[in-house]
Structure formats: C-alpha cells, structure tokens
Image (cartoon, rainbow, N blue to C red; front, top):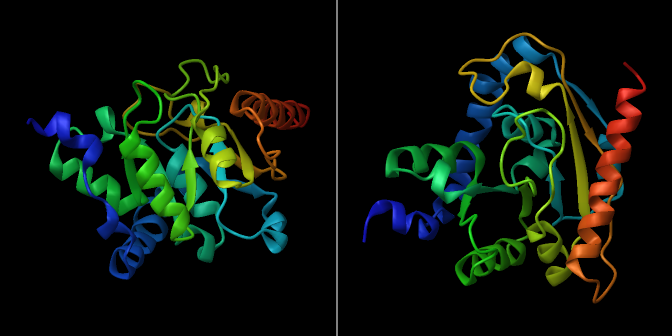
Length: 230
C-alpha cells in the first residue's frame, strides 16, 4: 500500500505526549509566533469565556489562510493549547512521512479523510481524543476560502459535538485572507484578529445538520459585528 493511501491511518499519538507538547510550545511561541506577530499584529478577543468553560470542546473556525491554525492555537490559554488537536486533511498535509511528522508535531494534527464523511478510523481517533480530554480544532469548510468569504459548512464538527455531547466554540478569524491568501507563499503585513464566541451547546439527539446551521449563524453574526468596526 502506498504512503498516500496509508496517510489517513498515520499514527500521531506520539505528538500528544509531554515531550512533543513541550516542543510544540517552542515552535508556536518562538518560531511561528514572531512571524505571525510581525505580519499580522493579532488581536485576541473573547478569551474570558475560558474562565467558566470545561474541556473538551470542539473549536470551529472559518478558514482562508495557512495562518489560521497557528494563529488560533497561539491565541488559546496555555493549558488549553497544550490539549488541543487539529484535524488535518490527510490528502494535503500527509503527502509524505516527513511532512506528516512535521505537521503532527507543530499542531498536534490528526489526519482525516476529507472524502466520504467521517470514516470509521476517523471517528475512532476522535473518540480516543475525547476520552483523553483533548479539544478538537477543525475548519468545517473543508478547504481554504479563495475569496475570504465563508463557504458552505460540512457537518463533521456537529456530528462530533452531538455524538460526544461537547460544546462548539465558534472562532471567527478576520484579516487572515488579506495577510496570506491561497497561492501566496509568504505573509504580507495586514492586521488580523481572532475572536472566540460563546459556546453553542448541542441539544440531546439534535440533528447535526441543525447544529451546523446554528454554529454557522453564530460565526456569521461575529463577522457582521467585526465588519461594523471597520
């Protein structure tokens, strides 16, 4: 079996161990951090919600740039960041073992297959994460927006939230597309903000599609409120 076909089953549990967590803190704060600060001067809003929130949760963010993942992770309080895994597309980020290892180490990434919904292997890995009290960050659009506007949402995040009775924390990212849109190999200076919204709690037995609508509505409202400030 080729590496590409095995990518979605690549074991990343090692990236959640203490040594990897410590290394990731160095990467995010002292390697990627200075670059992000220089080019985007990020403003973080809404972190007071963590005072009364208990993990694990599902973080759901709009997606338009390669800056999105490290920016969200750096914005989390340290104890939350150390226990947050990122669901990453196996067909894009796990093209070869070296790149897969780097992505897993840098972001505690877990490969998922973007085709055909949540596979049995993916649901088992997510269940393991939840059992170990890890939060999950994912981008329900499935790919980066080419225009900066939010696209349609897939239902994977809502399925996870309903299946495991987890709150969904919407994260609205502003300015990332301008700083580093699809096709650009290096950021340009542009102010950005990361806004954590109030948790959206699934109703027991709720259809994940309905929860997706509620989460997307929350992000849309956050976008409208942010646009009013411009």
